[in-house]
Length: 259
Image (tube, rainbow, N blue to C red; front, side, top):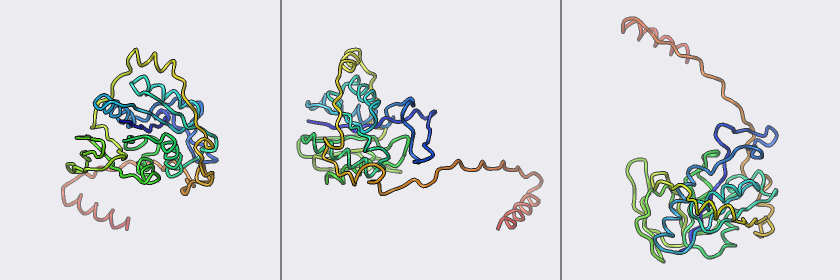
């Protein structure tokens, strides 16, 4: 079984900065980590390989520094890693990003399952995973909390819902986005750290992936962030005191004045 795990390197939540000209995240020189939800996708990919054999390939689209995230994934137990990096990708929205990742997976060719975290901590859109499956024209299940069974042709999974869960059977190849309830990510082993230290991460550019340049970067992104601002702080509330009738009368009066 060949599992492809898509991960993203995100800024540490305490150091998020925005480029005022492009309204995009500034990533260069910022301490970064693997997107927390992607850690569960990495762990699940490794568990599938341990159970069924095969290999786990982890890929990431980002600046050159994202190779550190890929090396961390190798230290956890992934077999191979590929960095998708090119200045032409800068400013890509979720649709353009999913297009680039799908082109990389097409280049990989032989895969059975694609795993993604349910969403990225810096964007919170949960759109890239479904976008990849759309570009590849393969079935998907989002918010997967358990992979019950998997064979050469199909898989049965539990999908988390607001109340309870539903069981879905899906043909392979397919894509799953996973939630944190699916497992507990392992710590890197000493052997894994040594392997990661020696690992040479291949870098694929837009030309390597035969990308349509009209579909990548800012120009290829159908969505735009036109303005970013900090909301005005809310004024502190007031605790009404007195007997019930006085409180009700005053509250009614205040609400009437607001209308």
